[in-house]
Length: 199
Image (cartoon, rainbow, N blue to C red; front, side):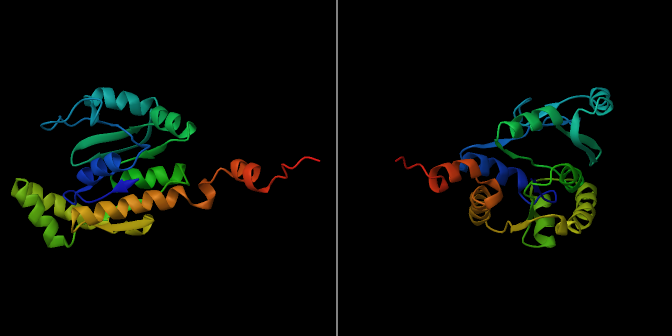
């Protein structure tokens, strides 16, 4: 589970993480916002209108959903549970509202928060990507509010240098994969503990 304030580099890092770590599967969310240049329906998001989204909410189709900057986002419940039941490692890229909802339902998740080098560096990134002044102000205000939730996360990664931040994310995935609670105990006992000698 990866969250970050807008402009911290979350989307770029998540794409690089999936490309760098075999067996990591991104969850594709639904959204009511319009596609950005280069985004593909079904790969980056499922782009739907608001009535269709609200119908899915009523059917309880989402593991979490939230309104962010005037648009709705939601993680499809069935796709998520299907991947988890297959034992796949799933990467969710969601805002803090969604992460807190997911944390209440999936207790064994791993929660990572991406921070920019500083709040002023975040402002500079928003300016450089061409956001309007009023939009920058709105996102800066929301960023300060979201960062207050940092205690909900297991790891903090500071994205000052993209390569270094990616290395830290990869290290987190590898470390979590080898935690005792994720080890196949049956395999371990069958191969190293059970007495397989015959008389």
